[in-house]
Length: 637
Image 1 (tube, rainbow, N blue to C red):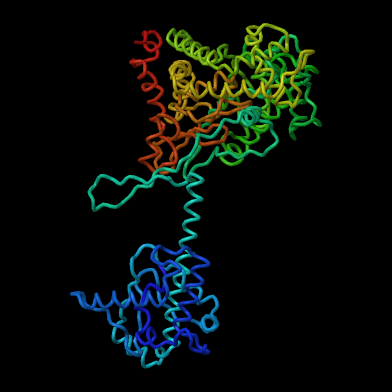
Image 2: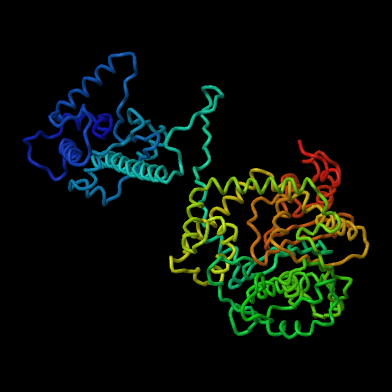
């Protein structure tokens, strides 16, 4: 619609007593001149509707408007009155009337921008512009002040309508641009949203969730996270609790640090990595030199079985298979220093005159796990003393101790291995990659696949060493990305199929039961160890995360740590709570046994009773059993 469509805005005298087309031009332009300019501007700027073709003159339109007005006045509808001298009109809706300033009035007289705006649309949602008479008292007050009389006042009204139309047009154009932009970015739906079936009077609409795509898997980023190069300061949430809570004990389960590959790609050169410890070589640590000095005096320590004959730190110029590297030592020196700043300096968990009774240390029979545990303890303890260190040997990688006989656990492990094989053979791109690598190396594809080449390729990647080459070509980054992407897809399907979850429940019950029982005794006031350390592998840490229900956790990286904190409420001395943290991130309320507790209570921690009930009872529910022995020996349906 256009401003010229509303003759009610103008007075009768202005319609019919204005100068004709042949009249001389006055200093103050007439209404006809203004309308002609508006019509010319609208022809140049805006498309005209069918009823406003160029051949339709202004005089013809004015006559048609007069006939329409006469017809309305002759009918039953009450005719609309024009304001008397000194009257004011007030605009209703989205077109507020406002006085015109001197600059715009001058532009209007010169036929400039203000007159051009009269031809622009005013409203696209209403048929006519509704003008409502202002209250009588307000009219009289304005009339006394002498603000509403004369030709300039009427021109101001018309200019205000044109200005409002311009603002509405600009605002509408802006909204249209934003709407199209948001639709293009898929932030709002293009199709209209269906209304609720709650009756015709309910016009409330529910905005659907934004359309978001599943983030693409980035194998390079995941590989860098797995390497865990110690070059960025790490923030952690360990030790965070209200001031009236007291820390009673800490249980830490770690994976060993960076190591040399366990497997070598056949007919290729092994990565040239030096496993001697050199303080001046990166990555390094301020305590690395003192660590080397103390580890060379480790003959006084007390260790179980074969642990006493193992080296205390890596020392080969060319790393042996599975040997801990300097990067692995530095990773756990950083872990120990971080935990020391929190648990000892802040919470005084271990006294300065600590003894071996304050610690419980356990490791598998591999040199990389023993050396990782020693590196963490050296930077964690107030004063490292070999005479107070006593590592216990755990022969099982899942720390099952005397409860390792579990046929059903082995059954679900076999099912998980079948699932892995089925997924691998379906991945045609992966099989082509293995065939291409086997052709480069010059061996059968089956032999290459059995050598687990990704283990060696990860070592090349983490230490920035070129992938191996032969006379037939080189293994490249694309091969590595394909295999790593398949690993990530395998982890995703593993969570969906639940075979690994059922295996994890039975595999990790012994170590979780040991942790829960120790926490119970501490809560009852019995003297127990203040700091517990299990130095283990990825095959130890991964099932623990799965059994706890922490599905969002990544596969354990080098030097990963899982921490259990036991707290006592200072206001209610009989209440104890736990916190679980993975690599410094609080995952307490991601666990299956405490996920619902977070929705109903304001506590920042999980009650100890929930963790104990999960370990003692709930872990056996998926097997229709009430204890560990029945769950391990009852055949599944």
